[in-house]
Image 1 (spheres, rainbow, N blue to C red):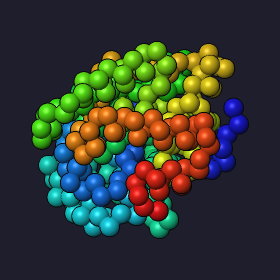
Image 2: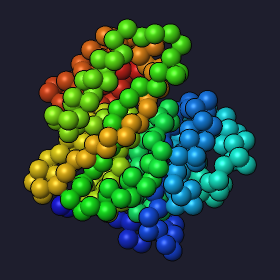
Image 3: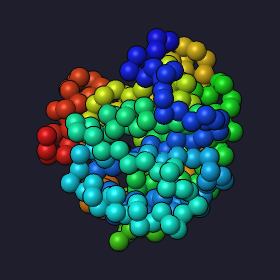
Amino acid sequence: LKQNKLFDLSNDKNELNDNDGIVSIIVPCYNESPTIKPMLVYLDIYSSDPSKIEIILIDGNSPDIDNLRKAVKEIEPYLNIKSSQIKIISKEGVSGRGTCQNVGALESNGEYLLFMHADTVLPNNYDLIIRNTLKNKNILLGAFQFAIDRSLMQRPIVGIGWVEFFARFRNKSLKLPYGDQSLWITKDNFVEIGGFKWVCILEDIEFVFRCREIAAMSKKIIYIDPNFAYCAPRRWEKNGVAKNTVWNQWVIFLFQKVGLAPTRIYEIYYGRK
């Protein structure tokens, strides 16, 4: 595989002297200050070894950055994770999940990379699961099983169980995890693959499809761990199951089959440039 020069980290001056076993958790953020405190608490208490993780929050040029910094500062004294293990990155021109996650990878020190959403709760001992799984060199990419956190629902959502059913069917039959399941990979493999496309939307779909192709050619595995990553229900509460599902599939169709540019899809999906 041809290495993308954008991810040539061989001379990275920020690299720790000993990065063996470190899991770098990379979280793109856009107006996520309300979710950051519980996210950091869960990452802390569910980690098997808080000293072996780092958390990188990449702000996507949101108006919320000051609140994000304040929230992190307020919760840090209550964590086992040290403040030096939490980075907040805010750079002009950095926006969109693909770009944010690539920037986070470039800033990371870990042997393993975990890309997750700010509203996701990972399983207990998530870091140990990732380390033990990715020690198997036959596994190219890993993800957790998909679930929706019903404890956060403001009201019952009709059809929410079907969302989980089809996500698990997709995982089992197609080996096609999405970003809300939290994607994890060794840093070496991420570099070799070339990282995410520098796009503002659908970066996870494109990345996983690319990994599937590489895995098929190299006889490697896309692994779905049976433990659950719990996703917040806010998008289904806002739009409903039917609308959200149809809308998502339509956007993927425009990207994969029609070839519509991600910037245009972003404008359609979010209603903003």
